Length: 151
Image (cartoon, rainbow, N blue to C red; front, side):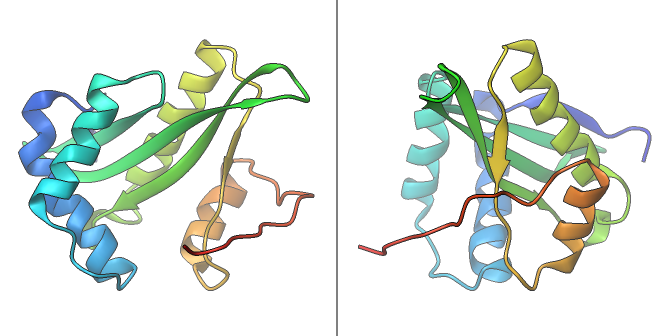
């Protein structure tokens, strides 16, 4: 898939990114369907506030086929910015075609270019495909345990 283009999300991508994000949330993660308004608000929040995060999209033949979302925080231990790769999604028809690798590499290049301390991410225990990608890309399982509280 040599004609895949990875680029930062622009205002022109919003309407095409909404169904892709909906597929990720509803079909892949089996969560409730978000409204178009909530998705638009979220995408535009990042577009209008690049200091809190950004999204990249993968485009093939004029269609969006994947996206990655980075959120930014800070590391007290390194006294530098840190990035959280919160989402990396590729439509089923384009998996195994290196689209995920290209999105991941773009995020990694971003943190290197802007001298971030590092990038963290998580994936489900049973998502072996994602784990294979992250292992291949040089990711290491964290020494930290992940905790959460749902509000």
